[in-house]
Amino acid sequence: MTSYAKRIEDHLMSPDDMVLAVIDYQPTQVNSINSMNNSQLVKNAEVVIELANTYNIPIVLSTVNVKTGRNQDTVPVLKKMIGEDVPSYDRTSINAWEDKEFNEAIKATGRKKIIILALWTEACLTFPTLDALREGYEVFPVVDAVGGTSPLAHETALRRVEQAGAQLTSIAQLACELQRDWNRSETVPGFVKALVDSGAFPQTESAN
Image 1 (cartoon, rainbow, N blue to C red):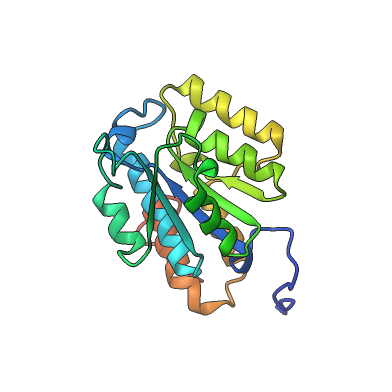
Image 2: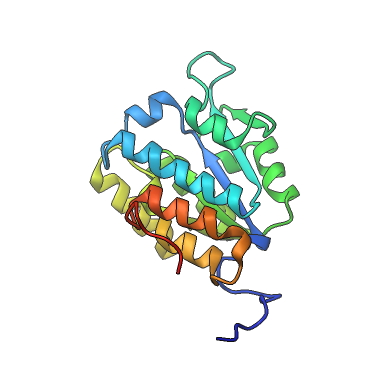
């Protein structure tokens, strides 16, 4: 039972080279999702944010049209989990990559792998994903924590970004890829909690 040392360069998702983008988890957008249950969508987004916090992955948060008065801020449960000290980049552009402050915030992290949560899949996830891929980033949409205006719109958008080079992932896969080894004991409690919260582990599951 001898694990290799943690990789310096890693083609898999590693906490040291990841940034989480959370885009437009606002009441209007959440309530317009028809590809999955709205409450489950928010719950799943919570789990992804929980994982980012567990593995010290920086979060870049963005909203659309809050300052113009056309929209409300990020839903409170997610805003609280992200932390009040994390800035929120409000914008008017549908494509967050075309907003100067958001774009610069992503690039300022120095990280080249982007975990992305965005509503809707067919717009606010697709557009920045395509732009980031073209600039050499690796992008990982978390398929069970994003949604579109219909199942067809959601699935079509995922097909488009995947064909462009995005690497689709799920909550369970993301958690396992970030953790990678039970010997990394400092993050095991958060890893197990995330999988329990997502329903991947039963409530009675413990790390063995």
